[in-house]
Image 1 (tube, helix red, strand yellow):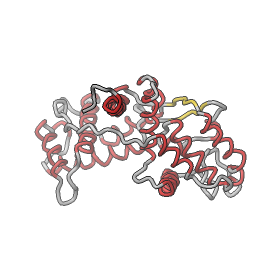
Image 2 (cartoon, rainbow, N blue to C red):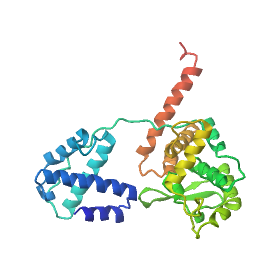
Image 3 (cartoon, rainbow, N blue to C red):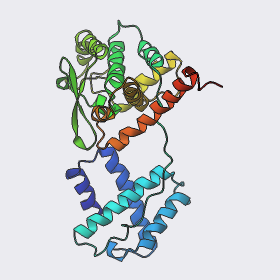
Image 4 (cartoon, one colour):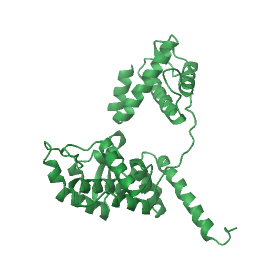
Length: 298
């Protein structure tokens, strides 16, 4: 049953490989939990069994650490989906997880760096005369200039670029077109003309846009290391690829962009996901108001 459900998620829902791996892990743990309670078929499972699994996730045991609310919520979501699928396929006559709600998560505001810090980070890519430095600058400009996830950036092919935009493939296989700003376009032009041919000569030929030193596709880990090295040179702590994505969204909203436009640029399926960024800009508005309005001063 588990294999059928995962195949359904991969083929019909188009879930990303990382998400599928997480679901597989969570559901194997769930099935082990059911087996420990003497349950071998999904039709035997009751709501109390699902609730007990949620409690076990939050408490942890000798083999598993206690999960935070977000991780437990993901596991419960996987379990709920499995039982819905089993009911629809006729494997079970009821859905014991229907009324089980995932734990509430504290709403955490996305972290972002300001524009001046972004400029320091981009400048810290290094001197612009080395091929790998030109690649690094282009990568960082694309991450910040398009709001791309790191997996989307390293998954780009040269054919995904045009003069004014880039085609990104996001979660669930969804594709979106994002404009390229002047700085990102200039950095990409320099990389494509002056660096990529030299780097590609070390490999066997690949359509990948961003290449590693051996001429193959740059990996997520390689891109992470590029960012970390630039952040270290720029004197910035805790900068991650996703933080650049947060900064992209926050700076757009600060500049007056509509939240629906930002949703499309980020590739969010729901505007609710994007709206968390508006909380960041509201905090910024409060700061400006407190500093500038005569009736806000103490």
